Image 1 (cartoon, rainbow, N blue to C red):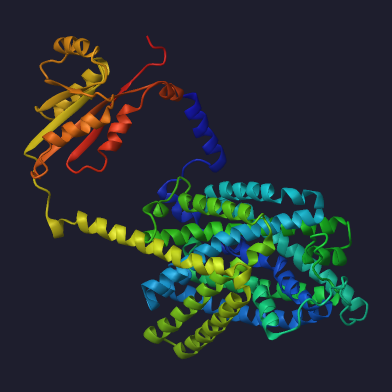
Image 2 (image 1 turned 45 degrees about the vertical axis):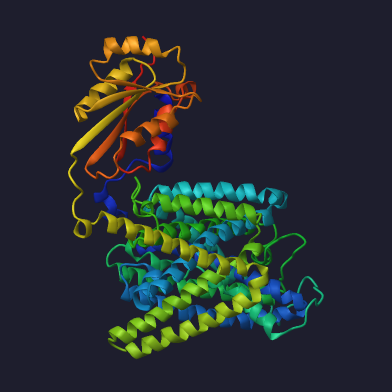
Length: 619
């Protein structure tokens, strides 16, 4: 009893007291908190997007890093197009759902499921990438912690999971401070860095600090590969469109304004980091594993200064809490899929704190497995990252084109043109990404998404079959029960058996007790005691030469169960005593459960347990 209460108390301590359903409307987010919850993933990508571009360009030699700036400008333009397209999605679908709802409603079932599989996969990768990048920020400042990066990542996933289980509003409050701390520190760092560059006369870009030899020729393919790597800056842009119902009314207007604010911040920070990294000659340092943004912080804020360590702390926090975007949206998208019968019903259930707890726990488990497999290395995870992102972008914007063509409205042709252009560009980026990153891990996502879709369709077929078989309109009501036979298996004659017999006689007058004889020496004792306590109920003794309990009982039920008669029911009533302490179960046979399992999938055979609770003092 104590252990149960302590577990209950620990759960309440970690996630808080239950919230009533009526409190759901009070759990909505204002724009300030919503930016922290839904934009942390997108804003955090500025910490590694520039580095991903440079990691590809240095393959051509240090001189090629000058291409990072024009590549960044192209990515910023693409980001603006995608953000505007999702702004339209928010206005057209104030109920949320993002790429899945838009594609499913306008393009059909299969495109909708492709978008859902892509975005759910992306959310799992978001957690793994964000956590590993956050740990990399810590190990850049404290290199001695590098061997423990996986353990640190798993601990951080556990902490974020607990915070999200506490509820949307509470997690929004907790995550708001680190998000705005990062924005403030980054904008301050960029401001100081820009001032220092201007103060010395705006000199041309300094030569790269590390001279990398050319390992590959400069080709269009390699430039496209660098562009696709930098497109990691677009991850998380769709999160606000997915989570519109979490905003306070008017939901669509607040979500739209939050999306615009996120896009402006993201473009400014990404371009600022790329520009200053180029001007100060900063390139990835693969010897010390120090990130590009950490090197830029040392240059702008001073090596070893308090401001540098505050900046690294802010970077680590935003990278870790970027995973919160996935924790906010993965459960919500899982809810939409479960509502449409493409995922198990459990994902549609609200937990104690008015959050979709099952979705949160499933995401944490999947991301933890991924983190362990790839040893917490961000670069190894990035090639898997953007395939799902750009696939969902393309389907969402294509769906908006179909939506505008069907609904029309004011300036529909202009809006359709913008969405169509965005779909074309993101589709091109998707193809580039698959081609350039296929051998580096993108093939895993390409292969995984069809498997995920197959799972959705299998779940949907199951629920449709269940609904069809339960339908009264299709099959009518089941026939009334004309004969109800009750069987009570016994292993002895005691109080638990008498309680089960009394219950059995309340169900039917046709009651039979069955004793499986594993030891012939015990049978006479059972018969004598039954004559005294059996109260006239017939006792059938089943010989069991091989000492099996379940087998002879199944054969006996098969003999008396006339399966041609749909109006006959057999109920097996199992006497079962319940020990006072959990560990007492280990001291007793679990025959009742074995019998239950044996008849679990038998038609017209019902198994029920009659518990007899034992006292702890045995008096």
